[in-house]
Length: 129
Image (tube, rainbow, N blue to C red; front, side):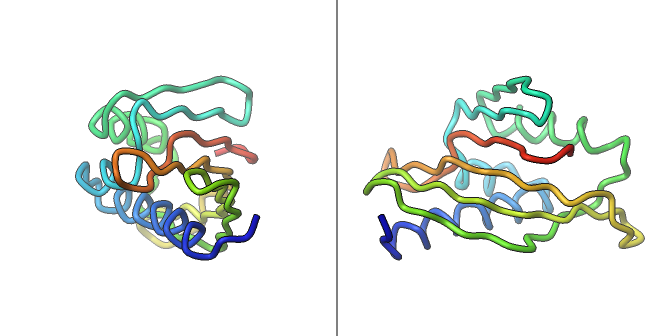
């Protein structure tokens, strides 16, 4: 199903998420995600967060050791599944403060329309992060 307005709105929520983690901004995270939020990691483990503060604390913990400073969206595309659900595949590059590359991460996000807005409800990581 190709429905450009739904796809654009879903993609925008993923871009907003990237901006939110780059700024460590819980308000942007809250606008880009729905909670509880589920993430299936590369190794098959499942992480669950119940709030934007919980998510940001976990993200910081998971990226601190690598020296993460910011991420960039390298590629992104969406596919409308229905009027209330889109799949968005995104490739991010994670960088240190000196602009050296840590990793490229590929994720599939399930973005849903609920409570009057589009937001990521779940994700699956395709590459080690």
